[in-house]
Amino acid sequence: MSSKMHSYASCGSQIMNRAEVLAQHTETPGMLTRSYLTPAHHSAATQLAEWMCAVGMNVRRDMAGNVIGRYEGLEPDAPALLTGSHFDTVRNAGKYDGNLGILLPLACVEQWHAAGKRFPFAIEVIGFAEEEGVRFKATLLGSRAAAGTFDMAVLDNLDDSGASMREVMTASGFHPAGLAKAAYNPASVLGFVEVHIEQGPVLLNESLALGVVTAISGATRYMVEVEGLAGHAGTAPMGMRRDAAMAAAETGLYIEQRCQGIPGLVGTVGQFNVPNGAANVVPGKAVFSIDIRAEQDAVREQAVADVLAQIERIAARRKVHFNLRRTHEAASVPCAPWLQQQLANSITDCDVPLRHLPSGAGHDAMAMAAICDVAMLFVRCGNGGISHHPDEIMTAEDAALAAQAFAHFVEHFQSRRQA
Image 1 (cartoon, rainbow, N blue to C red):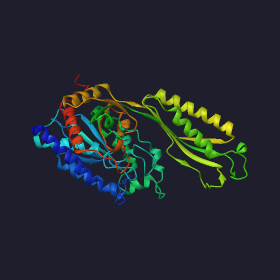
Image 2 (cartoon, helix red, strand yellow; image 1 turned 180 degrees about the horizontal axis):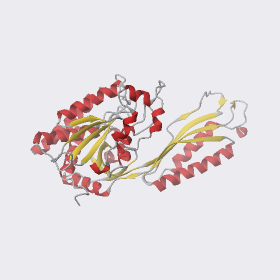
Image 3 (tube, rainbow, N blue to C red; image 1 turned 45 degrees about the horizontal axis):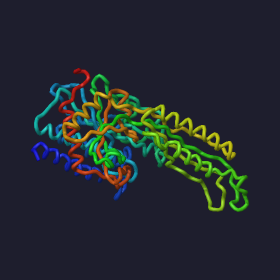
Image 4 (cartoon, rainbow, N blue to C red; image 1 turned 90 degrees about the vertical axis):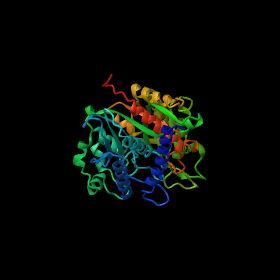
């Protein structure tokens, strides 16, 4: 193994060790939960800032709570190549979702700083304060602030204790009136490249360590309430029932059938509830969620239209009423071909097989696309690709390969302004 490869092996071990340390910043001992502006979130931000300072970066926090480390270029105030990901988590999370995309570039910056290596551009590593939407039911808060697209209406959203986002931010020293100052000037940005675990099984099943993301899938989500008529399970004739739960179940089965067999299209009913249900009562009410995603917006929109049409047919036949509330609508975000190509070159130059694939999950890159071209480097995860779960795993070897590919990408980066 060459000394260069030894250095990247060291990066891999360091990334994994720091992920373990960061996982100790949690709201619940014994499992990783770190939601926006909780004490665990604040302490994680402090830890990231300390690491950024230690590897030679200038560190700042913006009014959304993002932690930003800047590694200056050869000239002061040079435009920046942005990278990073989020450091909040879902409840009972894995250690690498989001966190990898901060820790990996930090390990690379440490190598460059030790070697005295600078570039014609600055590198900024952003630890986005909020992406998952756990505490205030609004996603991508950190990256939307950085992109200048923060929706001020969500400041009135409440957490489970009844505190508003506005109140919590203010108490933490982040004043909502200053959120506009968190936005990057697009003229100062060369692009955004996010490193992330795949959160799926494609790379794992093909025995590949890395992948270049082609696009981040668009998504449509609904919360649905079905109103039927409650009745006695023993006396309500089958043909006369207005069973809300079975109407919801039939809809879920249709979504599963409609979204099968079409590459890149997925449909999920992730929540299903019969409020006040009992074993001997025909359900008069059911509540469920719909999540439909696809790499191509036209494919997703047609699937959504078909599901809505099927709901109308089910409602008429079963004599129930559906109340639908759309909770999320996001168009797909294509990754810039010129950045994809440079990532692909870096992977192949590192003697790693090349694979292009879409991302079915949403990422901070979706928000950053409002101000610059974006790209993503996927890293294989184990355990069947499981994520958002404590069994989420990856290896130090794959972290090292990803660090090698990312470092090669940065060291050979050609901005469109140079073309």
